[in-house]
Image (cartoon, rainbow, N blue to C red; front, side):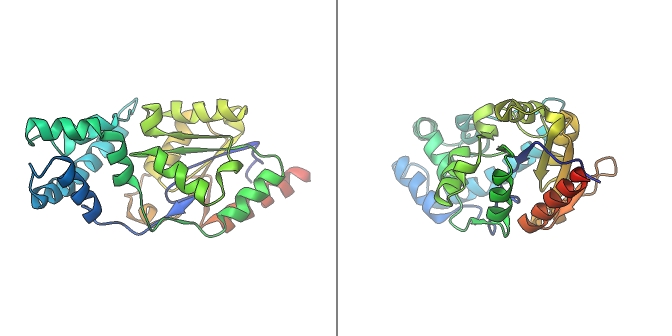
Length: 254
């Protein structure tokens, strides 16, 4: 049986929120880049470079995630290394100067929605005095912050930690340790809730979290299996997480 937590550390995508995949090269972002560079790069090439750049960035994320100390790249590096490297110098400079707002636009998902049962689980946790923090890999954490604020959930978190702001990527345990320090609870007394075995469960294990909870999402089903990484419990959504919390409290009260 799971030991009742004293704090929750939660991933964003696949746990707090989910969304259908957006186009690899969102038309609004293509138009924004085209206007920004004054037409120096054709819209068709921008779309193609965004598509391939997104794939290359995803491959880089997977590769660095297997390293001993995964880091995150600054916004300007993401654009320069994966999208604009073959663009004219002035166009590259224009994108670099607007790297953060462009990263926000690339990260934002109009279709984001709060996962079922998450508001109930978070409010029940808050009502019992459990401090909570977000621990998420993100191209632009500001977009995630704004979504949670608009959804009325921000006030339930002590802190939010995103890879682009911290310069660290899960499964780097330092990201989890930062969150545990922020909520004032030893990492061994925290539940780490995520939807990825390779990133979240691995991060929980490396950090020494009290429990690793795997919440199922479309990404969970796409991941290859990892026989050496097994969660302590699984949940389908926020309702499942709430059931686990209640079960752990009942066990603690016996």
